[in-house]
Length: 205
Image 1 (cartoon, rainbow, N blue to C red):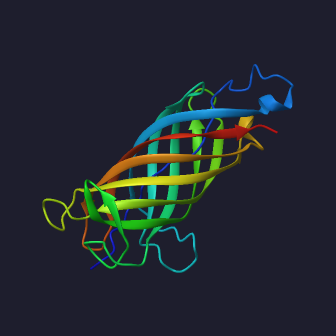
Image 2 (cartoon, rainbow, N blue to C red):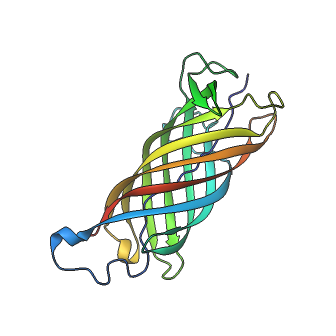
């Protein structure tokens, strides 16, 4: 059975305009705790982050959200997911996982990803790399093998610079979220929505 394509999108750490405008010269104040939320939709795309000529798990997310002390932002992010080999998934050969009160969801691992945030007030860009994580998809819906398919996910990010006040910044964080595949064609191309929350730290040089 064809592998279900999913882009669980996921977001990375950001700041907002004026995040460090009142910063002390003390080095300890160069690292900030951040948290926020986002929502958006994604479609299948063709990125191959692990260079194995397989792009059937990659997707493209467009989202918007808001960060504490930072304000509103928009996000464009791509990533690639691969099924974890094993048994227990009810749809195709893959490791099982818990979702929607069942144990036969399908477990995916994050191969890689990248993204960029744009803060509305300044237009500054904050870039990131997705370094790990997992997703659980439930293809065993009430309609059988037809969507909608629920999903949950976690992802890890590495913050790696940007423009304006984000130039040279570094950081890390974790996103947790959920979503749903609403459309899936015969070639496995999908459309989905997702939303999530994140927490982490980010540092200014």
